[in-house]
Image (cartoon, rainbow, N blue to C red; front, side, top):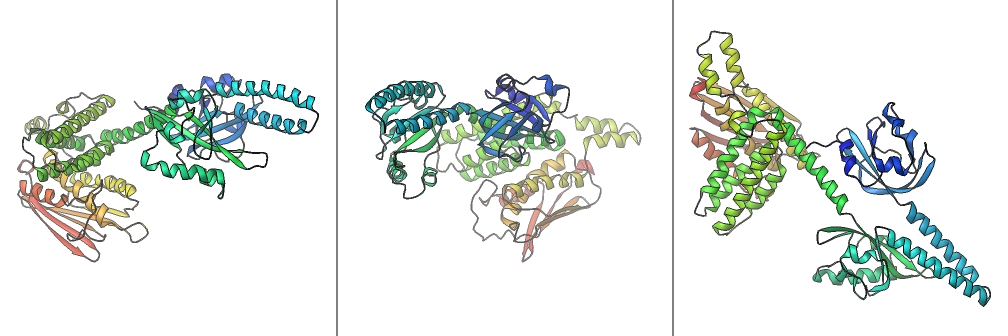
Length: 553
C-alpha cells in the first residue's frame, strides 16, 4: 500500500504535523489538536504557513531531513501554549512529517528538582529545626518526584564505578528491561555479549573518572539494545556530588520499538514504490524478467544433485534480473544464497524454496497494486495472435497491429541507462554519458528474452569493476548495433579502467564472482552467437554477434 504523510499520521501516538515543500500545513493528527488546543478548521479552508501555527527555537528549516530527534522549545501561536519537545522530521514523497515528542514534564521536573537541591543546601546552614523541617519536606518531595518518574514511559537506574545497579531506580525498569535491576550488573541487564563485557567495564570506569569529557566517553557506549524483540534506547548522564565530581552514571532507557517499526514500514514502502514505478512504466520488459526468473527458479528446484558451479551461474543471472527492477531485497537474498558453499542438497533446496516463494509473493503484490491479474499471460495481449491477424489485413492497419507487439530496439537498449545510473548511485560513481545508435529495428519478446540477461550482467560488471570513481575520470557507455543479413551485431564501449580478466575481483552484491562473462558466453551460444573483448588504456569494448529471430525477418 502506498502511504502518504497524511495516512501515516493515524499510526503515530504523538502530536504530529504534515507540511508540504512550501511550508504549508497539510494535516495534523488528533494528538496535536487536542494537546495544544488548535481547531482543525484553522487550516482546512486556508493555506496556513507552518510559521503562523508553531515556532521552534534553534530550528532554522523544518524541511531539513534528520533521522535523529532534536531537542527544542516551541510556541503554538493560536493557543499561546509553550513547551519543549524532541522534534523528529522525515520526508515522504513531496511532504514532510513532523513528530513532537513532548518532554515538557521532564524539563519541569529537572528544574523543580534542581530548585529543591538549592533550597536544601541553604537550609542545611541553619538550625537543627530547619533541618528537620526540610528533611520532612524533602521526603514528601522525593515521593512526589518518584511518583512522577514512575509515571513516565522511561526506565531510570544508577550505576556505580563497578557497573553495578544501585537500589535507586524507577519501577519501569522491570517492564522495559524485562528483569528487575536490583543487585545486577549493567551488562547482565542488557544481556551484553560475554566477550565484550571487559570493554563495558572499562567504559563505565572511564565515565566515572572523567579524565575525558563525559559526553565524549558516553557516546562510545551501547545506544540501542534489543531484548526479546523490544528495541531499547539508552542515554547516559553523570550523577555528581556537591563538588561536581561524578559518583555514578544515570542510565535513562525507553522503549522505541514502535518508532523502529514505523521507520521500517516507511523504508519498505519506499522500496516497493521504486519497484512499482519501474514495472508500471516497463511492462513489456517486465514480462521477460518474470519469465527468466521463473525459468531459473524452476531449474534450481528441479535439481536433485548438487552442482555448485551450475547453481551459482543461475543465481548470478537471477541477481541481475532482480536488480534490473530494483528488487533489492531479493537481490540481497540471492547474493546470500550464492555464499552457501559445501552444503548438502536439503540446505540448498530450502534456500531455493524460500527465494521462489518470496519472488512469487512480490510479483503477486505488484500485480495487485497495478490491478493486473496474477497470471502473467493475461498481462499482455497474445503477440502471436496479433501477428496472425496482421497478415490478414492491409496496410497501414497491419503496421499498427504489429506496433502493439513490438518496441524499437533503440528504446529498449536506452532503458538500461536508468539501470546504470542506479548502480552508480549504489557505488558512489557517476555515469556521464549513455549513447545508443542503430537502425530502426523492432525489439519484440524474442529479442528482449535473449538480450536482457546479457545486457544486465555485462553493464553491472562495467559499472562495478570498469567505471572510475567520480573524482577520477568521466565514465561513458556507447552501444552501437546493426543487422547484417540474418545476424545482429552489437558493440558496447566504455571509457572505464577495463574489465581485465586477470584482475582480482572482490565479491560483492553487484558482481565479482567471475561468472558474468561465462553466463554471457553460454547465453550467446544458445542463439548461435559469440563475443570478443578488447581492452585498452581507455576502457573496454565488447563485440557480440548473434542470430536475428526468423520471425522478425
